[in-house]
Length: 179
Image 1 (tube, rainbow, N blue to C red):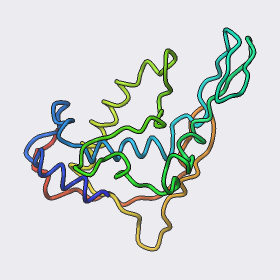
Image 2 (cartoon, one colour):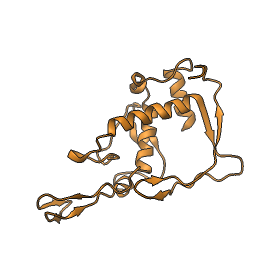
Image 3 (cartoon, rainbow, N blue to C red):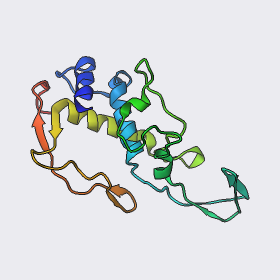
Image 4 (cartoon, rainbow, N blue to C red):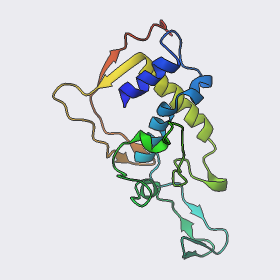
């Protein structure tokens, strides 16, 4: 996956300049990697509780006014009825047959409706710029003899990664200088 993102970056941006926001539309695989990361390990596995303002229903279940409602994002993003092999990291699930981006309706990393996260556009932009900058300039691998990182994480207000070791190597393709 890393090599495929780096190849896309080389072909669409090159190594002479940093990635810009305007490059975003030309990097569909990078965007699909970000989406798959948000799907397989949501920042917030359970969204902030809300209170039903009126009697309602969700999925055929009655919800009385005043009931606290929690959205289990982990369950939504790992439901095998909607995601083929949900525990497998597969960015291609966010691309169609022509390599264009697609967004399944069950992909809700920032929530949905009137309570969607107000920081979604900023968060997505930051993820794009951060990941593209890192992968344009460096390559990452597990140290020889080490196990891959444990992706279960530590659950708190957000899902926190457990400590792990990584080898970071500068890429010869990056010629953009010190930025």
